[in-house]
Length: 418
Image 1 (cartoon, rainbow, N blue to C red):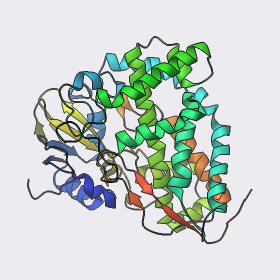
Image 2 (cartoon, helix red, strand yellow; image 1 turned 90 degrees about the horizontal axis):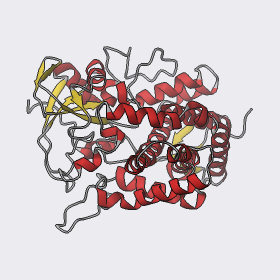
Image 3 (cartoon, rainbow, N blue to C red; image 1 turned 180 degrees about the vertical axis):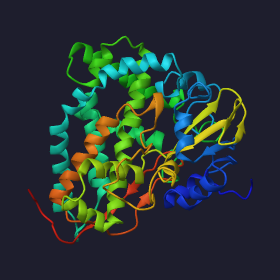
Image 4 (spheres, helix red, strand yellow; image 1 turned 120 degrees about the horizontal axis):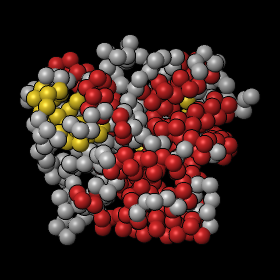
């Protein structure tokens, strides 16, 4: 299998997902063995099976009995064995029955009713950030990421959690530390042996966990209608509350932080589709789903085979790592007609950008709300997005991040509308 494409190397994703290689794997070897070599200072691993077809990705994600989140957690790289018990306290890295119990508890805090309550504030924030970026654009150019979407995602999440304004910069700092650990622009924290330290290790998260307990104690004294108040008054143990705060801070922030600029980049590369959206030829909700299909915020998730099994004709042994590739599944010709074509009217659109099965993204409703609002306000306030330079992407085989997206204010339709 050595002649098969390498879709492991995080450096490759600095140019975007390798769709030609995904296509080759889907056609020739939909469950393909990938070498896991040393890269960017991180040690080699035992290798893994890359799952690239939509049906197989869904099958893996819907079968937690065969494909476990608990055995080796959910990142390609194996955690330090000493850290694994700690990592397993997070809902993301659990199987039933523990996962189901935690999911039920936190779902009561993360309701559509609660998230919808923030729609007006979300819209006002989108309008303010986009207007300031437009009005302050030097020579008509601004960076959507640094001037709009980073703050937009972070501040919306802080509102939902109930984090005081003075503490919100901490959320971004923690997110960048955890998400950007593969990126050369994000200097790693080194251990005594000179090698990078896993940003998900207990020592690296101690500060965040201490803050979570302080915030929960405050919410017990001063309750409000926010997620941390609900969690602080739930039956979660202290360790469970800390881990859920970590999950929300990182995953809740980075989902929109990645998907929002990805959607604008996609539209900048497809100006006819932007004009169709502007003229009302595509429903906004349908368009957002297609932009999510095109630019999923998460590229991969890992499972570990709990028993010997067969997937797409390939024998998999208990203990093997099995990694699903969301961006590949979203372009599977067996499911999507002309998947290489951006179609803002595409329906049905069974993309897997928020996952599938019992671990489907808990914050998907809030993420969709934020994306719809941001695009709606951009249609009012900005002309068609035109690239003013190449985007800079996160070096990662996990998060489909955009670090910089320079846009030029040009073309018809600028200024407030409606």
